Amino acid sequence: MKKIIMALAATTMLFACKTQNVPTSVPEQPVVASINLVDVVDDKVWVTIDPDRFTVETTTFNIPKTVPGTYSEDNYGRFTEGFKALDYKGNEMAFSKLDENSYSITNAKDLDKVMYLVNDSFDWEDEGGVYSMAGTNILKDENFLLNLHGFVGYFDQMTEKQFKLEILRPADLIAGTSLSIANTLPGKDANSKKDIYNLDRYFEVIDNPIMYSAPDTTSFNVEDMQVLLSVYSPNKKHSAQSLKPEMEKMIRAQKRFLGDINSTDKYAILVYLSDSPGEGNAGNFGALEHHTSTVVVMPETMEAEALDKSMTDIVSHEFFHIITPLGIHSNEVHYFDYNNPKMSQHLWLYEGVTEYFANLFQVNQGLLSNQEFYNRMVEKINTSKRFDDTVPFTVMSKNILKDEYKDSYYNVYLKGALIGMALDIRLRELSDGKTGILDLMKKLNSKYGKDRPFEDDKLIPVIVELTYPEIQDFFDTYVSGSTPIPYDEFFSKVGLEEKEIMNEVGYFLKGRNPYITANQQTMEIVFREDIEMNTFLKEIGIMGGDTLKSVNGTEYNIQNVYDLIMASQAWKAGENIRMTIQRDGEELVLEGEIITPKDMETTYVESPDADSKQVELRKAWLKA
Ligand SMILES: [Zn+2]
Image 1 (cartoon, rainbow, N blue to C red):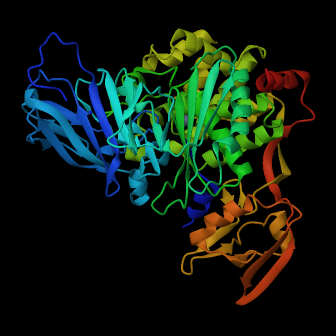
Image 2: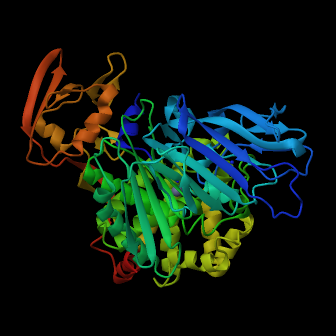
Image 3: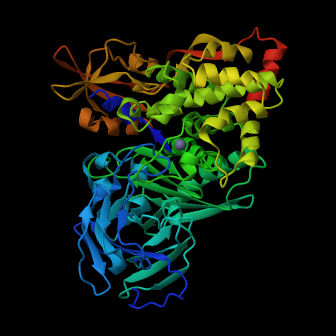
């Protein structure tokens, strides 16, 4: 998964019948899961799960508590209601609700099927705490985002059985998914159709999200892989066609970077663009990985260029998840328990190395300059310092579902990626530049791979065996140990030194640090007095303490600060701007030309004094 904290969040921080008597010689029937997207009742849809005959006396039906990749307990059962257990005569049977997600049904031999209504998470207040990219949307006749763990539950001991998924849908909405539709049948009338999908086991149900919406799809081929792009943009601001060029460029670059690690022959990018985030809609952004697809949720208001840039970072991260944890993973991940999950110690690998690759491939393939890459790593260093740097990453990872650790999850994208970087530099150093972390991942991939999980506490010894004895010290010190990584030391190996330089920043944000804050009483936007303004704000005449009233005639306050940040992404140097502010009780109009905002930042740059060994190691690190 990649959860991103947008400029927005940075600012708001401030503030599926069988007949009776089936002969036993009949082959085993799949579990039939039916979802009715046509007869939507109060924004809810009916789901029916019809398993084969039970031979046990009692069974338990579960909706997942959590799913792979989210590292959080979300209790998807909370979004269901009106649970019914029916016998073969259609009579309701008795059941007992065990917890938010599970139901126990006795006399299971009589049980024909269960039915329940599903609510979507997008409409819940704060989406019920569920990440949007793992969430669900039900918008009658318009859009259905089926992260199927939110709809389809499973019976104990039946997760390895085949599933047949039947989706009754409006005739004019089509499926965006990497799944093949086995058959499309007539629906209940001319306005509906029924799509049938065959899946080998429950995991495949969870691993294959489907988005139903009006057709807005395109596809392209990268080597022998077909990439499908399916977009839902409620106000038609963006489209599959508009997003295609950058996605294609990015995936081509990723494939070149990865070389011979073969992956899937089909990959689907399902993009849900949220209109008015926060008001009964998806409000947190990012994407969740699957073996052959990803669900991306982003704000529709983003300008094309900014959306392309974010999509490059996010989708490349999800695609790299094919290496780990989808490819290389421990037993905890392989034998995933949806209702009693066990966590692995290796989030540094699953999320950290993935995030590192999502940045490294860009500098390696020329999508980012060397300096842009260093700046990104420095930003990760600075932001990671907000978390306790002495907590061993393996401990945090193992306990990520616990209250004490769950808030540090975001650090997997920061320090996790930095662990990846430091390990890469160390491997390059020990091999005289010949091999790095990508080579290690290729070795691990051929040793394990998606059908051969490793034992959680054997991974580090295996890595040491595959690389150098010195790597044991690296893990003991910086990953399972409590020593913060001395970034300066690692950067100096590749000839980088710390330096203050004028860097391009955002109009209202320096990295994740905003120039503005909120007046909690008046809900007005106020420029901070405790930091220097950037060159743009200074040039236009803004002073710390000024209250922002309007920009180019549009009034802003903390409620629509998000619109301001989004609008500013489309500003171009040379255009005129007019800001109305309040200073010492007086209203002032500031007018001028937009300039590229810059500010002093401490970063790492290539040292002019670096020796040839350092320069060679740097080249091997970034360009090999
Ligand atoms: Zn991820």
